[in-house]
Image (tube, rainbow, N blue to C red; front, side, top):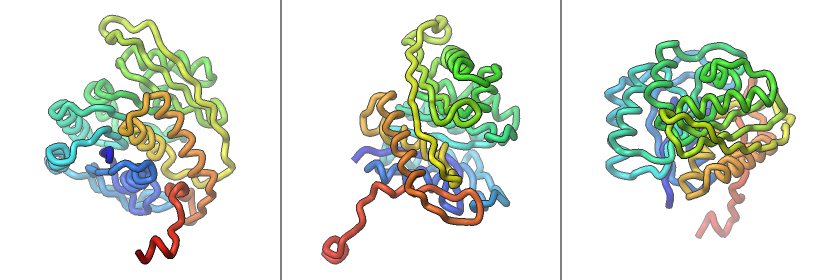
Length: 280
């Protein structure tokens, strides 16, 4: 069985973060493991408290995973502190981790900053250059590219700049600020950023807008689905394509839990057990 590791925060309501990632990995028939960066007290209506782990404890978790069950892919979600980001980057380099998906959770869709400027700088310097692909939403792509994005043409311009600046592939999530549900994957040429990347492969993924207000954890789910597909040996464009299809299905399943923006049905693909299976 292929394996994947999520490095992210815990969501006590189960809709996002570590919990969403592990559910997604299971749905993709990948053995999921986790290194927790923070505990959160949250539900579908919001976050009421956060408690970060220490960099030393995060490092110990990463050592425990990599020295025993090596992950075939790694997904990294929200990490709010510079010291934690540095520790993750240190361990990924130490263990020569492969197929790294970074969801650069910096800015909410509303525009509110979720991590400090210092942590954003560390993310740019230490972690993003190690990624196979990063998955920013529009506000996050604006931070990384320093370009205002209001059109699909802006997405192309900003995506090329990010790919060139950091030497990584970029999946720009369109969302309702720019288009309905169309995402753009920009893959740089094999040249390094120092050599000056000037050639890109661009692939649009046209999605279907699902009329479902319960979208808690969509970013976490998409990035962990991409990591799961990469762990299974898919090419990056195929990994993104299948991840979007999975996310669309999880939203279309219409799960409705909680008083706020509820979770998706991560297990919609899992076959219902029969009596025969239950009692063998």
